[in-house]
Length: 184
Image (cartoon, rainbow, N blue to C red; front, side, top):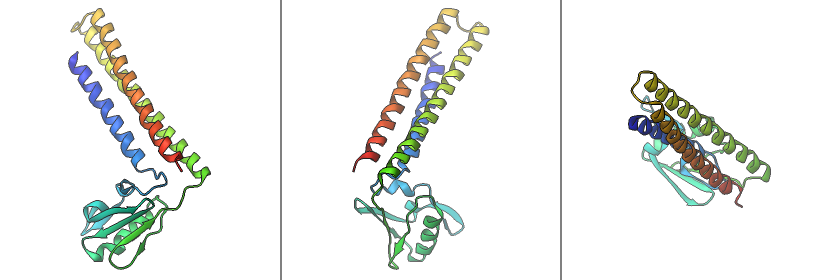
C-alpha cells in the first residue's frame, strides 16, 4: 500500500509542477524570463529554447533583453517571438533583442485571473483523477485478497488526505498568481 501512496504523491506533485510551469508563462505586468521558456528557435536544424542560445536578463521591471551568443541568431529569435502568443513586438539593435512590456489594463488583468483560475481547475481535475486511479488500485488489491477491507478503507482515507493537501497547494499557487496579476 505504501507504493500506492508514493505513486499517488509523485503523480500529484508532477501535476503541481505542470501548474507552476503553466502559470510562469502568464504575463503578470512585469517582465519574466520564463515567458520565453516555451518559444523554440531553429538552431542549426534543432528546435532549441531561447535560454540555451543566449542570455536573458531583466534590467528593468518591464524590459527583457536577449543577448544571443551568435549575432546571426537575432533574426530567427525575433521571428519566433513574433509567431508566439506573448503579444510583444521585439526590437533589436543588431546585438541584442529588447522586449518592452506595456502596463496591463484592468480588463486584461481580469481576463488573466480567469485564465489562472482555469489552470487551477484543470489541475484539481487531474488530482481527482489520480485519486480515482489510486482508489481503483486499492479495490483491485482487495479483490485479489492482497489487503483486507479495513486496510482498503484506511488506504482510501490516506489517499483522500493526500488529495486534500495537494488541492490546498493548488489553491495557494493560484491565489499567489492572482495576487501578482492584480498588483499595480
